Amino acid sequence: MAKLCFSIICTSEIEEKLLDLILTSFPDDVFTSMPIFSHGTLPGQMSAIEQVIGRSASVCVQVVVSDEESVVLQELLKRDFTGTGIRFWATPIVFDGEIA
Image (cartoon, rainbow, N blue to C red; front, side, top):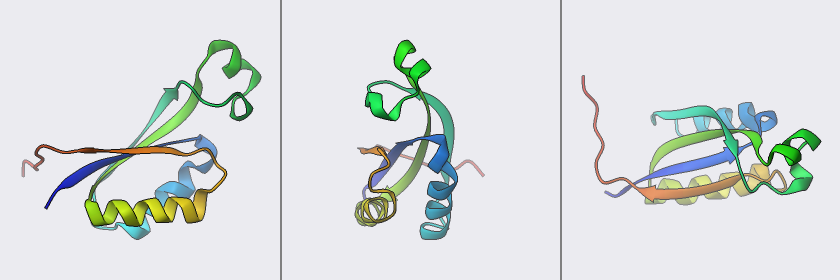
């Protein structure tokens, strides 16, 4: 089964709601979240300082999903986060594993 790394960029204001969604919808999946700076954010979604420096403080969440889970995750994001400016993409994973 093909796996994808599904990356989501969001503001810190909606981070907890997004993490809760992933925890409850994909309880068996390991995922990461990290603070980042994003570039190319629409000016209306940036503070005055962020507009001057050209980047905005954001959060990146990455979760490994199947093709089917990717579709479900997209539907959940559209349902719960319309109008928030969330950006997302998925990239194929060549291999993964766990060292136990």
